[in-house]
Image 1 (cartoon, rainbow, N blue to C red):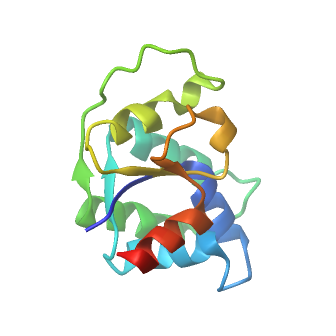
Image 2 (tube, rainbow, N blue to C red):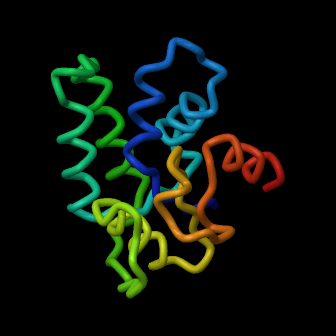
Image 3 (cartoon, one colour):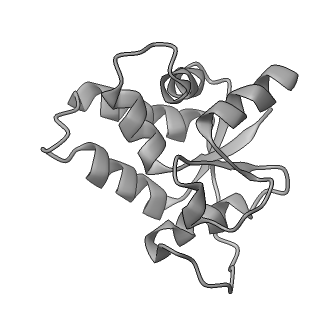
Length: 134
């Protein structure tokens, strides 16, 4: 099983795209199918709810609810592991620190520059490549 923390921007892109082959869309589908094991905490769920329900996006509320329900159903509620280094965007710290709660977890993001350069921080396309090797 592949453990992942999915940055909010990945879901924004997945819901936004009309391309069913886009890496973000494909990852969201894998999540909905229970093929990924998401790690989350209440702060992350709260951000998902806040951002994905913003009027400016106009996302279907049922789709947003399905994503959050799937995360809770298939995922593991995890604690933050403190990371004492500065980060480019402090709002992203929670995603990184929850990823640190599981040794073999990945953080999937479209904003790699917001996080420390490590092998666990991957783009959606890189995550799909990892899944193909598994």
